Structures are given as structure tokens and as C-alpha cells.
Length: 317
Ligand SMILES: [Zn+2]
Image 1 (cartoon, rainbow, N blue to C red):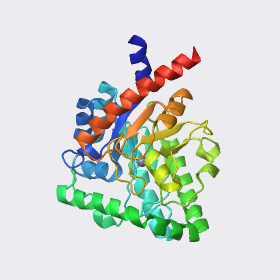
Image 2: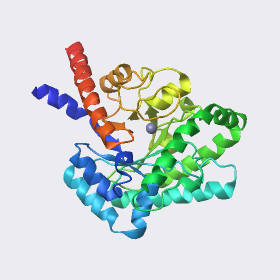
Image 3: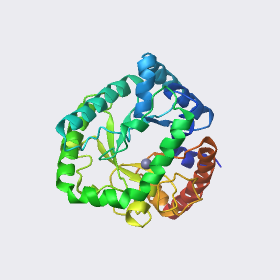
């Protein structure tokens, strides 16, 4: 039993802010997630900006509360335009400037990691407009995101046709963002930038020099749902040896519907046992849409991790 607890303590379960976003601002969300037994929250960039506008002191409060409760918080960049890979230089610049402002907030709030996709292409219209998301607006926005998934092959084809241009602009932005993050300090370490895979992306993720040179603080972001939709296969981490940021998300395999773990087509056993066995990450992030779903997913995940950890440790004896 003692060993069991020790093993599950190696991997901490973090939730996205989505289950709390209509009821709570970014600070309240951290408190609710703590009460729900999560080890941290992956905040949303726009949600955080909205709170800072009305309560600038929230950043210090977040830092104090999280340090006190040992919460490890990360932040997911917005899915709304402007996009960091835009071939329109003024749009690209606006996107980078917004990101840099966020990195300043993160340093004050003690948020150690920023997750981004190579692009964000939802219309700004759906962007959050208050410190909590409007319930009706959020519902419409979520469904827009799901329906949007249907256009993924078309979007991917479009990104493919202009791949070189998008990729160049993205890499330019990523190096500016990573450099700025490298000079920020959270608990004595630079802020880390996660490049997370996206099902309608055309970027060659293997070609990114994670952890090296100008990208010393850039980490590979794995998402089990995006992976399955993008490649038709379950996540295989056997070729990966560097640190990863891990999103454990279930899906019906067609759209990114963020369903409860175990209710979709993702098989987590392989990727989880490789991640744990090879020590690729010490946090697993859930991205469920509701509080009930997130709590259920946490239970499912904990029992999976216990089972895997027992197998991994008995194999290594
Ligand atoms: Zn994800």
C-alpha cells in the first residue's frame, strides 16, 4: 500500500480549466480544482487575461495559494486569432505580443509552463469576454469547436498547400516566444513552452529541436485524442526519449469531443506505461469538458496508473 501511494505520487493529475470556466475566474478555478483533488490547473490564456484586467492582484494571490497547496499550474494559449503562424506580419506580431504579455503574467503567478499549438484559427468572436465564461456563449463556442473538427481534413489540406510559409512564420514566432520565456523565472527555472500536436496541423513535429539550442526550453506536447484523429493510431511513445507534456484525452476518433476517459476509442495503457516506465513526464493533464467528467476521468486514470505502476515495478525487480 505504501509503495502504491509512492508510485501514484510520481505522476500528478492536473485538470484543464474547462470544467470550471463558466462558474469561476482563473483564481477561483485553482481553488476548486484543489478541492476536487487535482494537483494543478492548466489555465486558459484569455480567461487569465480577463481576470488580470479587473483584478491585477490576482496573479500574486494565485502564486501564494498554489505554493501553499503545492499546485503545479500550466497555461494553454488561446485557440482564437490572432495566430502566431500568420503570413500577415502585423497579425503575427500581435499574436506574439499577446503571448509575451501572458508570459509576464505567468512569471508573477508562478505558472511554469505554456502550451501552444502552431496556430490558432478560431474567430476572435468566440473569445471570452468576462472573468467567467458566459454559459450560453461558452456552450456555443464548445460546439463550434467540435463542429469545426469536421472541417479538419479541409483545414489540414489548406495548411499543407502553404506548409512552408506557415511553418516559417510559426518557427519565427516560436523562437521569439521561447527566448522571452527563457528569461522569465518561475521557481528558479525558465518558463517552458510546449508545442502541442493538433489534428489539423501540417507541421512535422519530429523535426523540431526540442530541448536544444534556442529551443532549450521547448517541450514536445502529446495529446492522445489529437494523435488518434490525426494519424488514426494510438499514441506510441516508444521512440521518444525526451521530456513530454502529456494530455490524456479520449475521443470518438473523429472529432475532439473531450469525452470521459474510457468512453471513447483511445487506448491509454501503452502510452501511459511507456510514459511512466521511461519517466517522460511527472504530470498528466486531463482536458474534460465538465466537472463530473473530469472527476470520473481522474478515478479511471488513477486506477490505470496503479495497475501499470505495479506491472512496471514488478518487471524491473
Ligand atoms: Zn490537448
